[in-house]
Image 1 (spheres, rainbow, N blue to C red):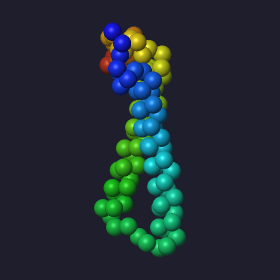
Image 2: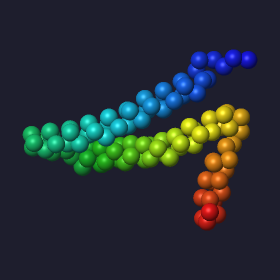
Image 3: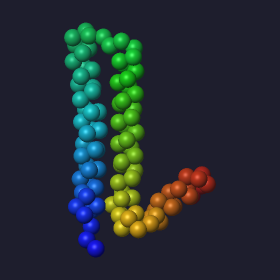
Length: 100
């Protein structure tokens, strides 16, 4: 049985790349915005500043997750479709026992 277009690995890799591009563009645009606001002497209130830092941290964590998970997807995409890949089992066992 042929997979639908939205079930193919190439479609999911495109989605992964678009998500990563979105996070990276956000991390580039925010420092530029900060420099422009600082140059104009436009100060942000405390809540706006906290929201920006929280969103930046979320972007960094998502990029880290994607960077760590992408090699797993690239090497064992078929194993992931039909079960749990051995590399994921090894990572989870290593993390749970705190010794590899």
